Every structure is written in structure tokens, then in C-alpha cells.
Image (cartoon, rainbow, N blue to C red; front, top):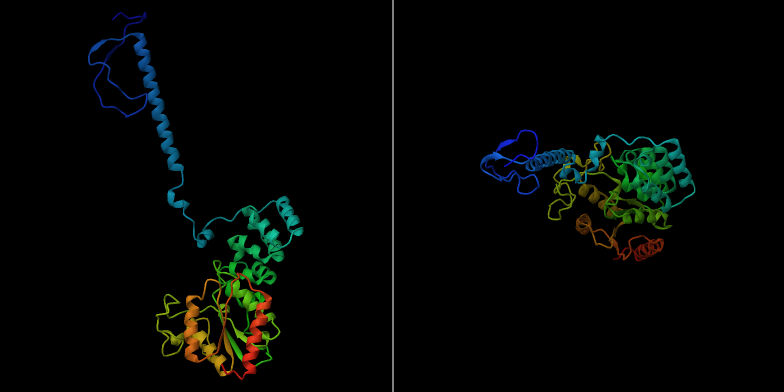
Length: 361
């Protein structure tokens, strides 16, 4: 071959080699197995191919670096609540942000306030002044506050004072705190309070103070306190107590514990040494049976609240214990998610008729 350029010809030795890649313009394809002279055009094409290959290799390396920088798949899994304590809190809002939010809250009411906090950036949800303003006008807005403020007693008290149902969003044990329970209107264990009637009532309800729970039981307990007749009775609400269990599954109906000293597996923890009454370390079944027995001895009764989804597993156990204690049970049924004030009137009427009939049934 005659060289087409003035400079000396380039001599190359081509050797067979495997493909570097299955695809791509830079894949090395052997074109000759001989020694000879190539034209400038061929040499230029080879140089361009080499440059293309180097460019592709650089792009692949860059892609690898980018992939390493991407979050791992497991980091997309929703984190548990306790994980948040290890993260840095959001920066505080600017004065302009805070004032703008407070103006909006001042001009809003009810669920509008709840939506305002829901749609706010994290630094507003984590600002105590902003959250206090919101929950003071709509207690249920506590749902959207930063986790740290759900553990702040001042914030929780402000929320539950406005709406007792907000207690279900409180964290770090504040949903069982006596002051918060009183502010929410569901605590009924005041030592010095005198009730008009001597009979005692035991309330059988689903647990309503966890975030995933409904608020029906809380609304029902507050409704009883507002009813002119039912509020005359001292009522035991199991939701207002933090208790243990001798059943590792808590509500396994096949577990032998029925709240008596002979059936409970942790009977040594069930009574406070000073008062000889159930305490925070009591098995919940023992504490509930204790109050059932008090209701029976005082000619009282039990009100069992069945929600739309039916009785809970714990309530089924409470039914068996009431049967063993020979305690009168009034069971309520509903087709609604909320509690109507008129429902309390129907219940109080049934209770009055029972007493008027000398508790015959």
C-alpha cells in the first residue's frame, strides 16, 4: 500500500483478542492478522475508535461512582419511631416563617388548623411555639407534630385539653400520664372525689390510646362523664392504666389467667404493698377482675362497648371474667364510627330500669 501522507507510514501488528464488550462502538474487532502498512484514513479511524473506547470506559466508571452514591435499597424501608431520636432535629424556622404560620393559625379553626400543620415543612412541625399555637386550637393537629414535641408534656397537655382524643398521639408514656389523662377527661381515680351513688361501674372497651387505635372508646368514656345520670357512678376505665400481663401475648383467650390469684402467673406483682390495690405492675386481667369484683359487691355493673369491628380479644376475656364473677353486663352496639350524645341517654335509661326492677335480671 502506498502511504497517502508525507510522513513515514505507521506499522501495526494486529493480534486476535476476545471482544472487550458484547456491544458498543468501541468493541475491538480484529480486522487483519498480518503485518503491513495502513493508510492515514485507516489510522485516523483507529485513533477515533480508540478515543471512543476510552470515552465509554470513562462514562462507565462515572456511572459506577454514581451508583455507589445512591442510597441502598434497605434505606427505603420505613423507619421505626425510635430511629428519629438519632437524627438531627430540623433547623428552626426563620422569624418570617414563624410569623406567617402563626397568622394563618390565628385566622383558622378546627380541621383547617390540622391541615395547616400537616402541610407545613419539618422546621415548622418541630417548632414548639408553632405547634402549641396549632394544638391549642385543634388538639388533633398533634398527629402532625414532630416526634420530639409529641413527647413534650406541655404540648400534649395543650392538645388533650382542647380535644381528649389527641392523647393517642402522645409518646414516651404521656398517653398514660395522670395529668394528661385528667386533661383528656378520661381519668376517674381521684381519691377525694365523692360520687352521688355508691355503686361502681367497670368499663370494657378496646384500647384507644395508641396511634393506630380508633377514638371511639375515649369518646364513649367522655360521653358517660357528661351524662347527668351515668356521671353519678365511679367508673373504672382500663385505658387509664399501664399494666403488665402474665400472658406474653396479652390477649390470648386460651391462656389460663382469669384475673384471680390462683390463675395469674405474676400474682406477687399485682397489689401495691401500701394500698393493697392494683398498681402499674399488675397483670391487666387481675386489675380488671379486681374492679369487676368491686362492682359486683357494690351492686354495680359492667358496660361493654362493642365497636363496628366487633369485640376485641381482650374484651372477650373480660366477658368470661364477668360471667365468672356473676356481674351484670350492659353491652352496647353501634353502626357508626363516632359516639352520639343521644346514645348515653339510651344507656342511662336501661340502667335506671334495671335498678327500678331491683336488679332482677
